[in-house]
Length: 374
Image (cartoon, rainbow, N blue to C red; front, side, top):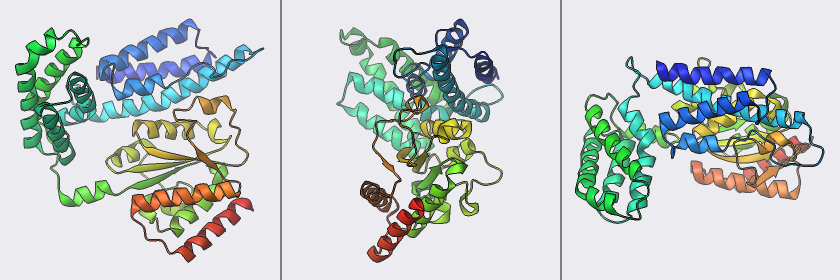
């Protein structure tokens, strides 16, 4: 498994870099960064989701100020490397699971990974015509796991390229011809291999399962007081035990034989909504940062909640793979806190189609404020 071994070596080198307290200007770090960038482009493509995630990693301080010491740069690089290790470990698990004995990704899985890239290249050339309906049909076939549908629209896309190739290659405004060439090669390869690909067909019960959302409460065990209060709040508005992952409570833990990445990948087709409970201790936990990495890999929607003592100037916070400018709620029991929790409730009501009794909700909210204020 050549790709597996290559990525495993890159991940193992992170520990070596961490032990040497490198900075982003260290030669060893530069070599490592070149290796991972070349690997991601080769494996996923330069316009892939994985490359976009890579570009979010920061290995230097987000803010520079007078009298900065080398330790500031070491700490920033360390945080970026830990984040990279968390995400790359997920990719390594996926390669291990998806590769066949011939070191090939299952063509259906490859189509899922590559679809957005295929569509973006075509859409950059044209936003009209039958080709967009072919792309819509292919997406529907992927979502329904309908092999006949997928084969049909792959063939239609190949024919579209065949009929329009002269116009594309002669168009002076097309400056990414190599991407179209890659599309053609990829579409032909997928059509040839999808014939023998095994994947279970769509059914109504599966659609119901996959459409059911799930909440993941990402937290540090030391913040259990706030986590328990949130768990009680969610239960109070009607969130069921199997709709919430909260590892500090026995009714909401990840199954015993699963790890966080395995479980989130299995839930990928469900809507995963992450509630991140930020604290200074959270930023010191590799496990918590791994959860942030898993959240990015699964492209999950999320909301930010903060314990009252959280330091927004902590450099590790600015280096996390989240939008730190996204509005959140400080759990200090204030009027602003109440308003933010009401907005969170409204979002979950829409997401889970809940029916709320206003009297019960008022009591639940008051209890929540009391619990976080004690």
